Amino acid sequence: MRVGVYFDDVTPEKGGASSILRTIEDELKKLKEKYDILICFNGGMKFPYKSVREGMTYINVDRMRYKSIPKMFFKNTVNGIRNMGLRLFYHAPRHFRESYMDYLAETEDIDIFWFTYPANVDLTTPFIYTIWDIGHRVMPAFPETTKPMYRWNGHEEQCERMLAKATFILTGNETGKGEILANYSVMENKIRIVPFPITFFCYGEEERPKFELPGKYFFYPAQFWPHKNHICIVKAVSYLRKEKNIDAHVILTGSDKGNKSYIQKMVKELGVEDLIHFAGFVSYEEMKFIYTHAAGTIFASLMGPNNIPPIEAVYLDCPLMITDIPGHVEQMGDGIMYFNGYKPNELAAHMEKLLTDASARDEALRRQLIKKKEFESYDYASGIISMLEEFELMRNTWKQ
Image 1 (cartoon, one colour):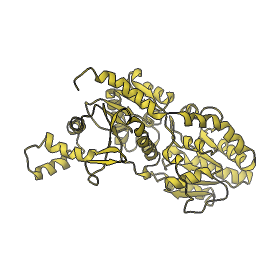
Image 2 (image 1 turned 60 degrees about the vertical axis):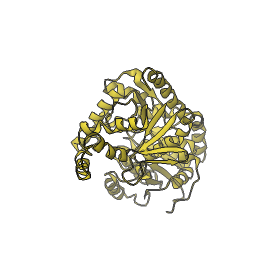
Image 3 (image 1 turned 30 degrees about the horizontal axis):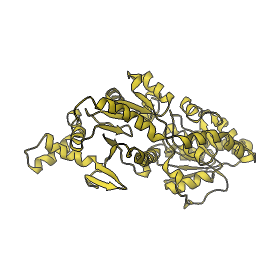
Image 4 (image 1 turned 180 degrees about the vertical axis):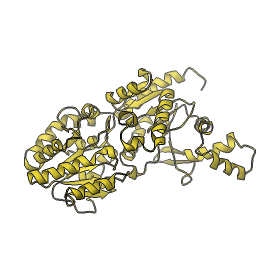
């Protein structure tokens, strides 16, 4: 059986989404032992239609998208009309977008697609759909889910259509499954829970960052979206300085998604400019170094249902402080330092303990050990293979 595994552009600047997609790419080597895998990606015109790397075949879907226009709409026209059609239909409504993925499936004999990220396409070929969150439904007050209006409408239309048409829906935990069922008319038996694996760079080399690190510091790897809740960390640091006479340094990595200037403004107003370090983009090797030398990782996000950096922190033996939303509690279990994301003083209490109690770090790592072993023993690929085996039974009922 041939499986088309669909990736987005996986440039590192995309943050957590990039690292998990890179990790899944490595996991595909296990799937390749049983299935014929084609990795499909959006490469524009920079990459050829088909290439082979490390024994894996890559298909540049954008080139197929362009080829499908003359094939299906302008078959007997000259190139000039073809190019005009490309400009006209590239971002057009469903009548164009329903065609090129099925055309790709027919051309490459793909039996099923697995969308490894929440893609927005139309097709009649069977597919597995990954949904990381439905934040626009769960937290519609946040500007990144609602403003501008077309963003919310787009997310809603995409979820309704893709979830309804999916052969299987892949989510990370029971909380995510519950959110899907509470918000959409979806058959429960279509949903499969496959938790995130350990990120690929955790197994690699580490490299000291090019910027100077404080002696003791906390780490928060997150892009500057409002729901990532950087303000809670800034207020906790301010509280520790003003009320406890403790200086707590925090390194923030990640690209600006519209909220960084506000955080920088609040850092200045609260008088902690020397304690909050905006590191921007760092390489995966540098990120591993920051984790392994930090006093602790803070994960202040208000949106789940599960996330990748908490897994990285636990696996790399970095004490974790994380918001107590239901998805995080399910994902991380007992023994983790939780805090209310709207109460900076709760976070500050954990930070103070790690900075002032010599035994606190060892105790935190001891409590995290059970979860670390669980992550180490988890086989992500087996969850995917299980879904493909179920589909294979269906696929055998019609002509190959």
